[in-house]
Image 1 (cartoon, rainbow, N blue to C red):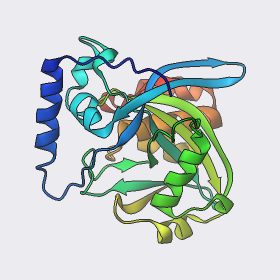
Image 2 (spheres, rainbow, N blue to C red):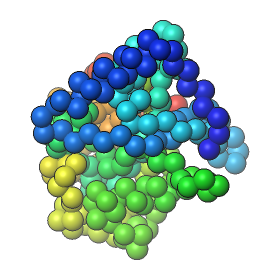
Image 3 (cartoon, one colour):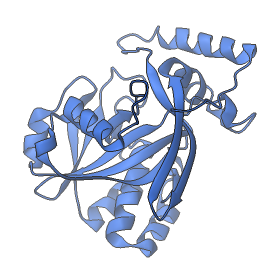
Image 4 (cartoon, helix red, strand yellow):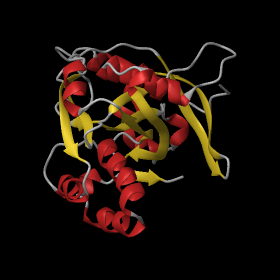
Length: 253
């Protein structure tokens, strides 16, 4: 973890405090402050994806990216919490992509379909962030999957939620479990149910052009997955055909 580029003046500190206080009044919504990893810089080369991270908090995220996303344009990213999110395309043993329907207890996108995952949490001082271990932890907490249940796990893309202006790592995971078995293990706190999608081009196309309530991150994750599965021409066609509100700002590695 390195030095933070976050720069907040008194006016913005006050705005964050007001936004956080208002968010805490939402009935039935679980809201807890805690440390998160802020994305400072990224680079991609022949050795892979390189991230420079610092510390931020969930409270600052609610007050900046969630509460004032327009700040990313004026005055700029230096006033954004920019916590690095983590989302996974989880493929079952029977060829189904498994996601979650977000419960009404979450502060952002209640009722929307979203990948399993969370936000990268800073490790103890002196320990490096383990990106794969962070996703294994999320999959265990949300879907009851263990390390032994996964045959493959890797980072495949970085996208940005165009509404929250939040960066999100997209992972791909393959499990030995069937979609039914995953559904039976689902933790019903953050998600109300599993949401299943056949890993077929026609099914993915239909969701990207349909009216299902998808988070921008899920749309971006499906675009990243489809790009790997169906190629560059497919991606360009789908980007042109996606609903405007589902368009993620995508950074591909």
